[in-house]
Amino acid sequence: MIRIILFLLLIALGAAGAAWIAEQTGDVVLSWGGYRVQTALPVFVLALGIVIVAAMMLWAILRGLWRTPERIRRNRRERRQARGRHAITQGLLAIGHGDSTAARMHAEAARKHAAHDPLALLLHAQSAQLDGDREAAQRAFRAMAEREDTRLLGLRGLFIEAQRADDPVAAVMVAEEALRLSPSSSWASHAVLGFCCAKGDWAGALKILDNNQSAGLIDKATYRRQRGVLLTARALELEKVDRDLSRESVMEAVKLAPTLVPAAVLASKFESEAHQVRRAMRLVETAWLAQPHPDLADAYAHVKLGDSARQRLVRVETLAAKTPGHIEGALAIARAAIDASEFAKARDALAPFIAQPTQRVALLMAELERTEHGDSGRARAWTLRAVRALHDPAWTADGYVSDRWRPVSPVSGRLDAFQWQTPVAALPSDKAPAIESSPFEEAMLATPRRAVVIAPPEPVDEQATEPAAAANPEPPAAQDNTPPPAATSAPAAAEPASPEPSRSDPAPAVAPAPPKPAEAAPSQPAPLFRSRRDIPKAVPAPIPAVIPLVRAPDDPGIDEDGPPDEFAEQIGPPKAQAGGWRGFLSRWGSS
Image (cartoon, rainbow, N blue to C red; front, side, top):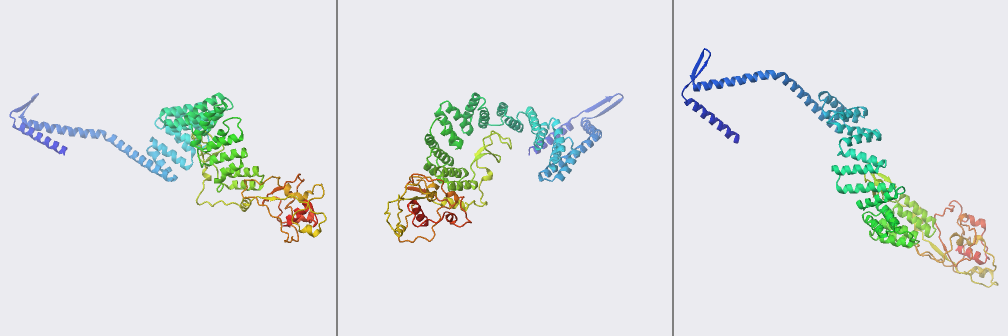
């Protein structure tokens, strides 16, 4: 609208000027040499305008003819550039699609029509990478590295090719050159930082980290965390070499990253050695609240040197109470309770996790069975269950599982990559089949322990007849002072003598009642021993009144193929008139 108004105003002004010139009177006389021209003023103005327009047209024609060759060259160049851009665009799309043939064809077209275009060099390098031609890709990246505008891009490509060729020396050299040219290059600083950590150059790594923070590549919180990681790594390496520098480094690290587990453990150790027990406990408690870890529990238990196992158990219970219900607290309590011989507390701590135990839970249960009862059968059952149990958390980074904490990932070189978590390969799946216990484990763990109560022998009349002695349920006393044969004291030698059954058995011990006098004894007594391993070597003396008997279904000495009374036949059937312990044990075995 404004343009229309301005156009109308210009027309109006031109018309007003023409009308004003037409109204003027007078003549215009031009005298040049012998020529004299005289005309009216309006006519002169009109002629002057025509001359000016003709001159402009003539100048335009001459100028166009002069610039025609240049225009032709420019048009040809523009057409070539357009074809080159089209080839580059189609080539990059082909690379994205994974079509190596089309990418190579468009790369050749781009190099023909736009040889000096940086994108043409990039397309040629990427098409060579897609074809697997590393030499051609390296030539293209070297050509890019020689140009000022594509130097960093070429160095980046050479770095990637060196990594693919498994040449860490060349990769680090390229990264250092790129970092020298551009300190704000994130990939170069990341690569050089990982290389410094790999060779243990913690001073160089800290310097690069400071440069990253100055260049604005990382924020303040990330800088503090990563600096704490590097200082912790240096402290762990110098722990046995330079303890002063190690202590100084870890103390600074625990201030920057108080929740870092290795830093808290090592700092607590140094504080404990300096008799700063309360400060060491606070360091461990801070890290424990953020991430419970077995190393923290162990450091907390031994924070005061010289304490007994029961004192360590009380301290561990205090730490576990800060995170109730966490499995690491229960495992720490169970470990300390086993060391303190508080087996009931260990079982109570592990009870919530027995239904679906992890490997550490199953191994602790096996140790508990072996230590408390000497039950190798149940211990083997729990050990077998540990093989198929759920995995415990571990130090994991980029799918790599390590047995210890590391500052950088060996896969990607990423700093502070290791996390205490369950490995990805061990995570449960909805489609995975459920792991069931073997029949041996179920039978072994479901079998209750039993204790056999044997009453002391009572004196009987020596004039008693043979039938009366056979029908009497009470065992007669031995008449001589000689020890009974080894074969008749198998229950006492098979298990150690104990004054009473254990309180932590899964089922109360039940003593079988002696057979009633009215019941008839079987024709053949049951064997006293199930295998040759059950034969005692010696008879303990004195024989206690209560002898626990644990019969394990997984006894390795069982011969499933042989007859049940194979060994009993070798030692011969008991005599009907045998007195003392031999007759009693024979009658008890037959019942």
